[in-house]
Image 1 (tube, one colour):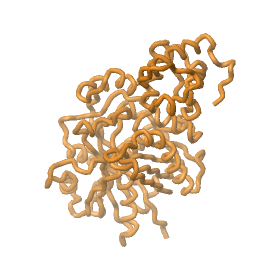
Image 2 (spheres, one colour):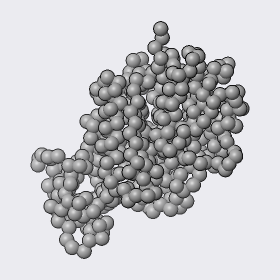
Image 3 (tube, helix red, strand yellow):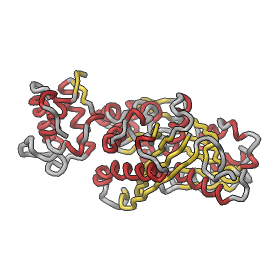
Image 4 (cartoon, chains in turn yellow, orange):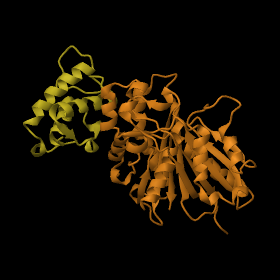
Amino acid sequence: MTVPEAQVDAALRPRVVEVMTEVIARLSERDGPVTEDMDLADELGLSSSMGLELLLEVEERLGVQIDVEKMRTDELRTVGLLATFIAAHCRPA
Amino acid sequence: MIPIVTALDAVSVYTPAVRVPIESLAEPLGLTDIQVRLFRRFHGLGEISLDPERSLADLLRAAIDGLGSLRGREHLVRYVVYGRAMPVVVPYPANPLHEVCREAGLGHALAFTVTHQSCAGGLLALESAGRLLEADPDPDALALVLTGEKAFTRDARLLPGTSIFGEGASAALVSTHGPRDRLLSFSCAQRGEFDTEFGESAERFQREYRPFLAEVIRDAVGAAGLALDDIALVLPHNVNVVTWQRLCLLMDFPVERVLLSNVPVNGHLFCSDAFANYATARERGLLREGDRYLVAAVGAGAGATFSAMVFQH
């Protein structure tokens, strides 16, 4: 899914990436760095239930609510794509 | 000649008045705080319908008692088909189905239970009842389709990371000529490879669940001679909200047309969701004459069953 740049909250996105990489490292029990180009399922081993846990932590730590009903998970395969989606599709909680 | 169809003549649903917030189920079900928060935030669960004081027979009895149009027509009921997720629910030789049939004046009917399709068993029961009636020489013969279940063990109460089961029951009177809610099509796909007891297929099942269900839904809609956009309302299984949100995105179908309002108040009522959601749709006037609607269910456990039916109201 292509997210128009204009809709992305540019200030929020780096904070989303920061929280995501930290949470993913913990959930995937990974020692090495988590980067934006990494595939969430195939490289990082995130199951769909871990994916929901990731979203919940992003929401709670950043005080936002993500529009999950618009989230096409099959198209948001990498850390970076998911961060862009979140920064474009959330509102203050 | 009146065409032979499978028609829902009347539906009665019973859910216990007791509602338990999911937070208070954390300890008995062994859920962590984050698992509970996930259930509430994404799965749409809120309260679960439970009544430890009522037995399985009590649940079935309450559903049958609510079926006013059965009164005086008991002698026409040839078949009682009970769709149930759990294969074994009482110790032998107890049989709550036969017990409630005798009490309801249905002791003469051929009564049996269909299982092994887990939560899709309710639709199997309905379809089986239709086929039995179709083969019956008496055009006035009726069938009673029952669902109902107790969430009586941890396995029966929790689908980890997916849903929490509640208790309830339904009774549906089925005929071959009723004018209301006629079955237009039924599609069912069984996937034996998704056996949670003997396979390591849980992650693959999660990945393929929605595409499989979408395929069965499209099959049922196509078999009814319709397009997805012709479906006025979807009566889902109440597995959770996020599954249906994502399924709707996959099918390009508006999630607003899926009746999900019972998920936060009941939880997942095993095979009874379809009937409970039908009753809610009727109560709220969501079905107009002529509307085509879809009922969907998935049964998972020892293999998986994906089922969908299209009806015309």
